[in-house]
Image (tube, rainbow over all chains, first blue to last red; front, side, top):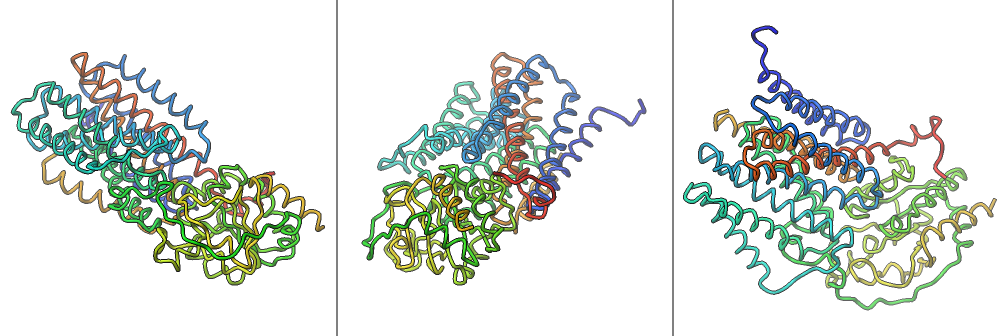
Length: 462
Length: 102
């Protein structure tokens, strides 16, 4: 081996390559054309960094490292392959929480050992520890809520006060550790326990509808925690990857909150975004039902149809049938487009994933700004399992909780067909004025069955 | 690494993350969040180093949990991101000999 070669040089060079691959991978992931290759690049970076770390000087405990990697990796690969696309948001929350927990674990190892050298390093270990622990327990609660394991949003008066007190207490213990005043295992343990409880009490009151923003926030926080622990371990790959995710995640969180017409503070400290929080306004008019065969004729002879899918469609697993219906219409020369509201599905972009799963090409899918001008020229708007995102009261009624939220102007189409299970209100509990308009017809039933009936009806037109 | 250099790296990496994500279409928000979730799975190398240097049984136990969780973050994040991005296709790609979903 030549004299200039050393394990340290190999490690540093590999981490450099990893950082480049991560940044280029993320960049490629931000365009649909190159997105697929982006994750492969980032994956290659991860593989390089993981393999070279086995050469780290002074490493022992390989008998523990390998089994831990194997168990964690196999469980995650198994669950990641099995999860349905509709459950993707909570799965991301789960994996993200694991990352936060790992960052906290690194901090814990360093701190139980009696702190690291220097105040700066110990401060970063403590900061990464508290952020990672909050992200860990908070993400676990977010997972539980979206998975339906936790159904109630726990709220009581003085809750914000409790959170502030918990945070202060954790910070005081953290400061004690930093000042080397009393670095006993008990103080370190208390610090982590308080941080874990804080993550739980912070997340419990937040409603299901706001959860995506919270998951995104915890994703950014985990990134930050990883970056901080990278400073502690003097590990360049962790510093760069963690910080990049921290800032990218913060921006992504802001974009999501904006798409939902909420501010981040509002999400974290209000408690809307839960069912039953809304007042119901009186709506004029009546609901007018229609038969599938009539809808079939209408669609078959339309020149332009805009489909507005909502989470209800995904729950009924109707996206495959809907796409089959649309392919029939396209073959007849009908112009079909899908209009996606930023918050359709469980998080921004989730509906695009669900439609992609059914095989809908992404160039037929338009977002709110693109499509809203086109409703005027559409012969029919087909609303499937969407509700609040097409409710015109968001434009007109100042007293409505969703007032000001950008909506899809489905009411501007010549005919509006709403496929809906029953007569209930939407996720926010608000009556939908769209359903009562003169040009609206209701097609009641399960979205998948209704779509199958529509396929038959269009075929029958010949 | 000296403190100031570390601070510069932090600052530049933060701007890089911001610039890379700015102007991303809403259609990719979910996969991108998942992708960035995978990237912070790099915590695995830190957890490996922490466990590799652990001495007492307590340090070893925490380090073991850390590596286990970090491996879950990295592998799980990769699998779900890859599954999501694999599905994004244009109508052009679809008509080139791909069978239609029934």
